[in-house]
Length: 219
Image: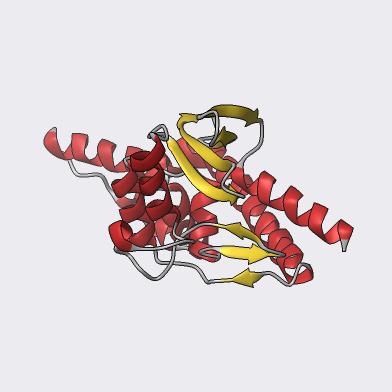
């Protein structure tokens, strides 16, 4: 591996962001091997610096934002006296994506990895549970619930249900429409009219943050 990949920062980034710059360098290495010449360590360093400086800054900003957001949400959950099930392993998150046929946005993946599922004041946020048998799980497993609604009411396949409001509305992520930042918008599905009633210009973590703040404000 490239020396700078071994730093604490890049070990964490590799898991979260897959580091396209690293992939690029490995592709370049493969190309040069095929052309009959192996790169020296000095060449690795030069290419790493040339290609990744701007990307390094961009990723560093993203990681800093992520840490700050996680700390803020943790504090809000504490103030709301929320129940937190506990994060689930990345293998289960990957299996959930494979089962639904869509990749999750970054903020929702972090939610599953860090908190799993949670609830406060009767407001339940579906997520992952310890049961990885998605076909035979129960609430609050978002994969099981989404599969159930696909079969029962014809919920569009790109929607992932993470909140049920009195069986009248489902709050979902639209996994089929991602922004440039690879995030998904939140949509509200009307379970009576069987259509979208609202499309909110917020990410999952924004929605969670605002609902927590509103609940704490009303305490």
